[in-house]
Image 1 (tube, rainbow, N blue to C red):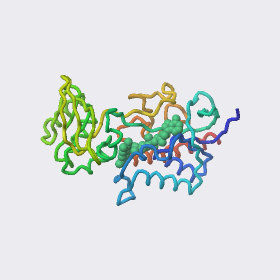
Image 2: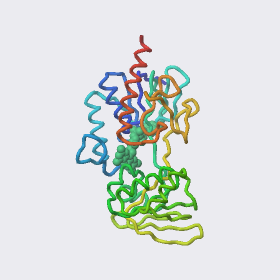
Image 3: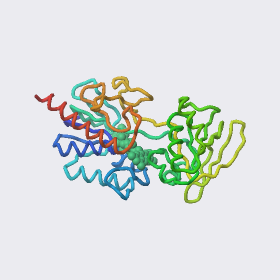
Image 4: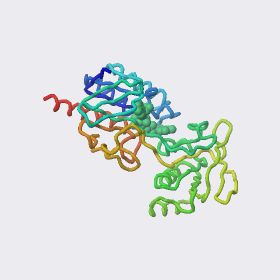
Length: 310
Ligand SMILES: Cc1cc2nc3c(=O)[nH]c(=O)nc-3n(C[C@H](O)[C@H](O)[C@H](O)COP(=O)(O)OP(=O)(O)OC[C@H]3O[C@@H](n4cnc5c(N)ncnc54)[C@H](O)[C@@H]3O)c2cc1C
């Protein structure tokens, strides 16, 4: 089967990939952006975005995705809708195989496959995502001014985000399935000292209920006792999973649950392979830094290509 070659392939069209696509198209790099679904990635799941610069009134995730794609298309963005099922980074050029068996090769590859929030998997969770169910306090806390919200989780990010939420919500109830938090001691101490945070121990959320939005949670404790908690929202902060199933993790020296480490210029452990956005091993996962990293990755890849050709 014939292999189609490009100087640069970008994998994934979330904010990181679309930004990379914009920079590649404007720089007139021979490129291809491959995405298995609709362009936009996680922002397509985002009801409203208030923290992306340049949009003083905010905008929906769908609108931002459309604008990012249209901007890149204006400069000749080259895209393919396909599911990449395997990547070979051991050979030169690097090759990618698609679900239909066709093969693409490239001198440089930017991984922008993103991540997804770990879900609770309870009734009401999907139905109310964006209507009271959130996976990101940094993104959504300001929508809960003077309201009562629950946080599910017991690690550093859950406890820190619970503290962040108290700047807006009047009451934050942290629900944990064990009798002790996993967060570091100092983070725990600050949370225990915060009089806006209360705790429900040894309990799990079994359902999220309401009419148009979240109104209450059904809980079950380890002794089997059922109860109901009235809330205006629930933040599920039980971890983020990388979309890394097709990545050669050993070669890329993946760490921390499968995220890809890079240097400041987005270079991975494999020469000519770069990573941008939520797939990178980093603490902050936001649209603005995903877009920034996509741009950095293309500029670094361009430098690599220039050296390759000189
Ligand atoms: C509900 C929700 C609300 C959020 N709200 C905000 C907010 O208000 N503000 C903010 O700054 N951030 C917010 N975030 C976080 C933000 O959406 C992410 O940080 C950002 O989308 C990361 O961009 P990315 O391009 O790295 O990855 P993603 O957006 O995850 O995109 C990755 C893309 O890669 C594609 N892909 C993966 N594997 C393959 C494959 N094998 N073949 C082809 N394509 C593939 C996926 O289909 C996807 O389109 C929110 C996240 C969620 C889930």
